[in-house]
Figure: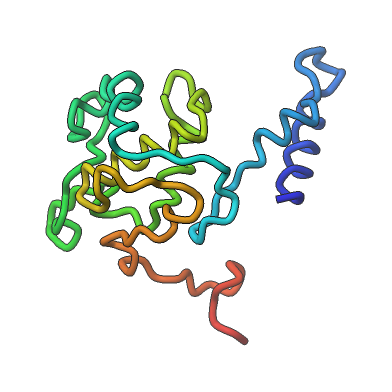
Length: 176
């Protein structure tokens, strides 16, 4: 994580060349806010907690405009449904059918949602919306609390549907 922060700081500094007279170097607080990597095993998840029941309200106010009232699509692709379609000629790739880790859902929501104001949700709201989407996909119960301990334990249907990248330059490839 420290490496990521250093890369962001250096990249930002290079991009703020006095030659063009625009922008500024990011503050230490800004760099820290960007260094929010969440790993599949839950490392990097923040403090906080939320249930699907709590997440329904946040979803209705912040998400349903694009993803539809039940998460089955609107202006954006569906995030609910698709169970059993991955091996078919027309797979519906949703959180409940395709995503391998529940922690990825939290990370994506925290970084990129809502689309017009990413990063505005608190950790509790992000856990709650994640719980709501997982519950809508039938993966958890409405009253199960999602937090840094429970979210990585959610069994995603397509967890074993991905294979490791065998190229040696990825760090996970075959040994020479």
